[in-house]
Length: 257
Image (cartoon, rainbow, N blue to C red; front, side, top):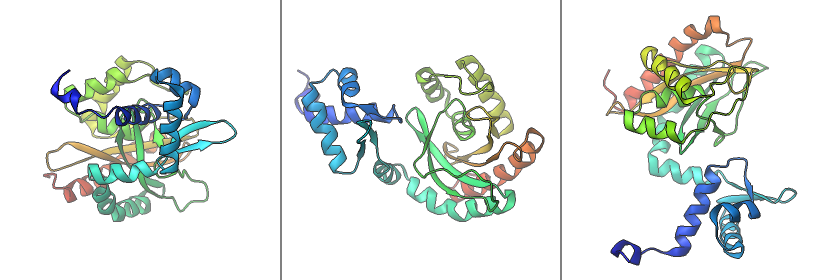
């Protein structure tokens, strides 16, 4: 037994494994599914899942018996990652981006093998895109995920891509790592990322990365709206608007001009 193994706490190890499992299954898992994937005694999994639910870190849907992570974990992630500060700094910029584009303006970041929405300012128009804070989105379709991943260091970028899957969600979805890498090259060249109906053909998104003082991508700003308003013809103009606001937020984080 190594020195490090001597000080491991088995029940904490198991709880963290369960949290990581649920984080990779945003639609949730039943007790049986968690037990099979973790290869733990069913009683242990039940006790851990129940404790997480009682503490507010997980939820259990009674009809389906499915467990999911709750948004409470997002508050811990905010404090640990500095996202709380980014959210505060971004608030007036999100409002300005919403006013300039008249579409819903959003702020998000990466969380494991998915993205997560940190904040939004809804469009003033009667038909609009509105999502829940803490909502997760797939990396291979989402403009904000592309905007962040494109500017990551090569090693980190490749580690993410190697762990991704590419399910087809619409006829526009990128369904291979090779196609995704080509898309990221274009995103890095122009500084703007698009979701051209890749997750849903009813809406489209335009995003730009938010960089910190080390010029590392820590978040993305984007606008999202119905596909008949955020059209391919208007996407470049939207992109310039999003990019200018993302640069303003990056400057607040100390990114050199």
